[in-house]
Length: 196
Image 1 (cartoon, rainbow, N blue to C red):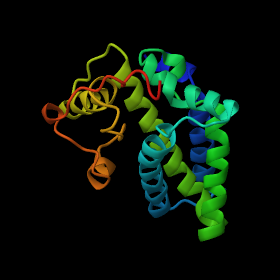
Image 2 (image 1 turned 60 degrees about the horizontal axis):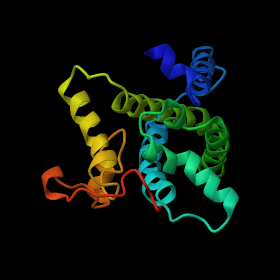
Image 3 (image 1 turned 45 degrees about the vertical axis):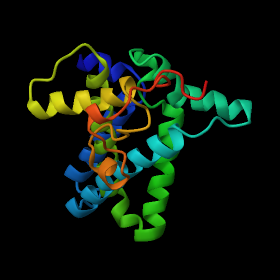
Image 4 (image 1 turned 180 degrees about the horizontal axis):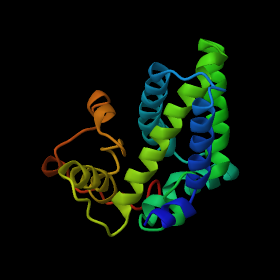
């Protein structure tokens, strides 16, 4: 299960990046701050919801190249939610976004916070990818929270694509008013065919 997880998308690169940061912190080559690590993680959890709701579910672009990216990043995942090659963030999407995020932290807060903040961002992405993976494979989590978060995400795929945008946690769905009780939502006919 873990080997399969690391074989897809950006997961192996994330693991290597996290190992490099951990080594840098351990050797005291990079400054470490738990505050900035948590800030980085929270930054990702907010952006996870924003990207998913407003970016990945955006109307199809009029430009063919952008539409192709939209399909690879999310539309095709809805069409075939069990395909692992469509499940994870591709390297070509993740790396530029990590670079821009690091630059944003550096410009706003200074270079000294970047390593810790990016460690938090990358840990949160790794968590997101793992939760997303478990939600889409034939595996039943052992904990109550694990079972709940799996069914929470699957509502987005099999009940309505208009709600439940939080993949790794539901907090932003409450803030964005996209949390609903499943029995109160009418089943959508377009969960697998976004904008078709």
